[in-house]
Image 1: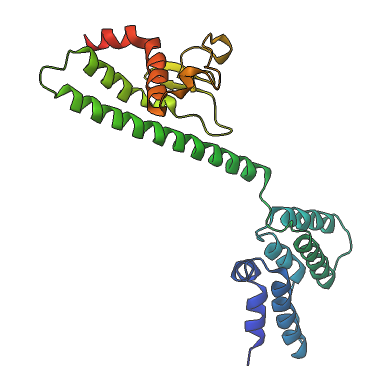
Image 2: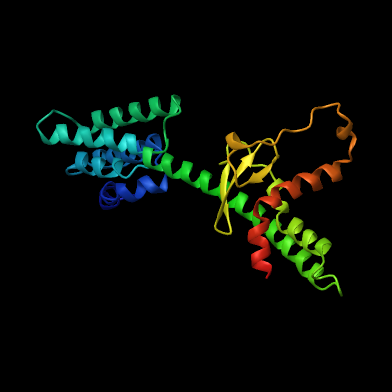
Length: 245
């Protein structure tokens, strides 16, 4: 059987108990009422219980609830009449309404900003990862091409290395992603006409895609891809040639 000391000890550690019940105000209040009734049955009572209640409520996990409790505490300290029973009822009412409205545990404005920034960072990391994979595949192809005997300086081998190196330019941005990126200190823009990342702005593009149904539209998919990629790579041929020298 609990003693007066044990009941008072429970009421003096309400801040810890709030964490034990995961900020469930209904369970918290029941805990307080049990201890209070236990003391009353023995002709005793808790001293300054209302201040202990304020301490306990103010460590709840919901910031709006805590703000509400702090306002009540300020009004109490300024002289507003308030009993511990009434405070418990007010706290329970606030908790119940917030739970019913789906507002309990809602993130703060700062937390929402952090969530949005985290999501944006995740998208950028995915895009960077994809570009990195393409660069690694391109380098691997370039290394293999450079090992071919008597062909390292041939036009065909150089073209193969370029295409491997710039294959990432045919990967379109995901919906909502930026249509401008920087690769090897050069700025590229997604061009819907070329269906590729180019150094010119889309609005400045003079390339006109072939009309559907034309004779050239019967070309194989791989041939069209190769031609489009060659067009894109041509934008920086001068820089590539100087680097290879």
